[in-house]
Length: 158
Image (cartoon, rainbow, N blue to C red; front, side, top):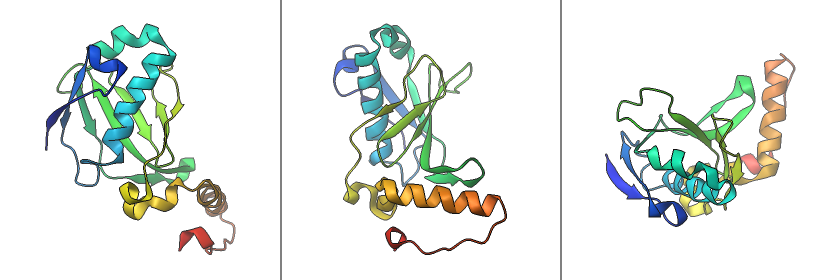
């Protein structure tokens, strides 16, 4: 699916994104919403980003929500945003988390926390908006990564 979506507030004065290769779990979901919120907030916090954001034309989700256990990175969506449809050059990469955390790959762009999506929007991923669950998951993965015995029970996991 592809479609053009305008940034929702401040950034809309100069930009809109064309979404390419959007996966089913990403389409119309928290990923697109948080990506757009990110650019709105980033430009408010760092107005000097306005010109960089204005050059961004295309966005693409890189697969479905996933974890990176080896890096203790909880469930997130990976998104590329760039000037070119083929994402040549140096596209900005965002890791978007269900708890509203958004981490960019480029140091000029701020790490932000937006209002998290609702449990209904997150669906099967709703537990990942719970900070207690994330803390448990990180400890669980750390123990597994170190080869230690782990207790797989956690009440938020249910």
